[in-house]
Image (cartoon, rainbow, N blue to C red; front, top):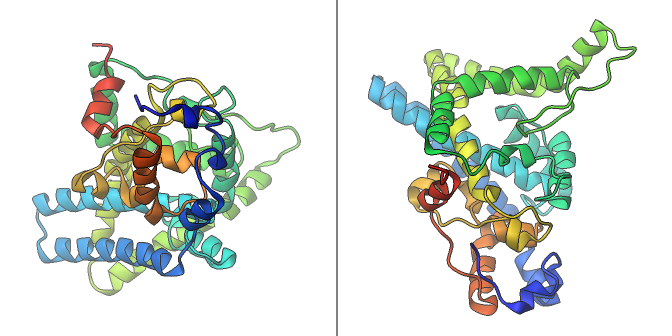
Length: 327
C-alpha cells in the first residue's frame, strides 16, 4: 500500500493541498513537440514491426511481433486517453483530432465518447458510481482464476467477446463503456434502420483506418502482415489491457480518496513496452492531478516521494501476487 503524510490526508482529492500554483502550472504544461513524438514513435515501432515480419517471415517472428503490436495498440489507447484529458497537444483542435484519428480510431475507440465515460471514472473512482468498477471488482481472486483469465486473453476468447460487445455498443443496443459490465439502452421506438445508421456512424472510424492500413500493406506486396495486427488485437492487447487495469485499481479501497483507491506501479523496460506505455503506470499521480501530461508524470512522482513521503511503488509481479492472493 502507498504510504503518505498527514499533509496529503487533509484534502487528498485537491491538487492545491500538496502543490503550489506555480508547481501546478509547471506540471500541467502541455507540449506539441512531445505529443508529436509520442505518436511518431508509436507508429514507427508499428512500421518497424511489420518490416521485421516481412523480412523474417517465420512463426517466432510472428509471435514476437504480435507481442510488440499488442503493446503499441495499448500505447494508442493511452494516447487516446491523453487526448480525452486534453493533455496530448497544447492546441485543443489538434489534440482532439490527432488523439482520435491517429490513435483511438485504429483500436476501435473514439475520443468523444471515451471522454464522457472516462470523466465519470475520475469523478467517482473507487465508489459505486465508478463506471469502470467492474474491471477490478473480481479481485483479489485465486491464482487459478487469474491464469484462466490470462488464457482467455491469449487464446482470443476475450478479444472476440470484446468485439461482439463493441458491435452491440456501436449500433446502440448497449450504452457506451470500456468496462466489463454493459448496460442495455432503451429500445422503444427504435427500428432496424436506426441501429444500422448508428452503427455505420460509430464504426466508420475503425473501418476506414484499418482499411487504410490493409491497403498500404497490400500496396507494398505484404497484405498478409495485417493478420499480425488482428491477432495482436485479439490476444496480447487484451492481456495488456487486463494487467494494466489490475495494477491501477485492483485490491484498493472502495473510497473517494485517490491515495487509497489508486496505485502507481514500478515499470521496467518490458512493462513499458507492453502494459505501461507512456508512463501510464504513474496512475496515482494521474488521479491526483489529471491535467498532467504523460511526460511529466515521473517528475510529479518524484515530487510526491521527496516532498510528501509517498513510498516507492511495487512492480507488476508484486501487484499480481496481491491480486491473486486468495490461493
